[in-house]
Amino acid sequence: MRARRILLTGFAPFGGEAVNPSWEVAKALDGRTFGEVTVYAKRLPVDCNRAARLVIEEIVRARPAAVLGLGQAGGRPALSLEQIAINLVDPRRNQENAGGLDGKPVIPDGPDAYFSRLPLKPIIALLRRHQIPVWLSLSAGLYACNAVMYAALHALRRTPRVPVGFIHLPYATAQTTRRAAPSMSLDVMVAGVELALQAITRRI
Ligand code: PCA
Image (cartoon, rainbow, N blue to C red; front, side, top):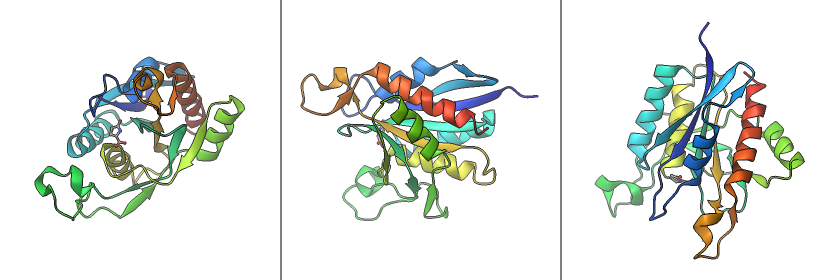
């Protein structure tokens, strides 16, 4: 039998930041096992098309038992469990369309949206029990994080039992020394994502 693995993705730093907490957390959890299931981390570029393509290639290659994407949502005060990914890339992020009004799809001819396939309520209950700030989010945005969540859900649309979803993370404390914005220590974020992975592992 193939070893069962959970794909955990994080992003490279962007917007002039020295780190991206999503990659710091993914790296910290790389190799962690939950029973028979092993987590493996992959770093993605902050580029909608490339990131979407890379996550699809990885899913086809490794056939993970679950996929959890992580990204930075600077300014949010809690771990955000994304509920929905939409088939749209913000026109302002779309190089070919600079200044235009039309957004492009993440996947041409894909459905308008996919819902998260994570056990959202159990994850929230578990994190709250451990006093880790968490909330549900109605929008993963229109940038690389939404594109990766959408692409992963699209790639696994025919295997509905595979949990797939995305969690946005606040700034890490070290990123907010020069600006007034909510932040969280990396240790707390790692603990929160680890609990989420535990809840996911119970479903696979
Ligand atoms: N956050 C951005 C892109 C990469 C990241 O970490 C987003 O929310 O789309």
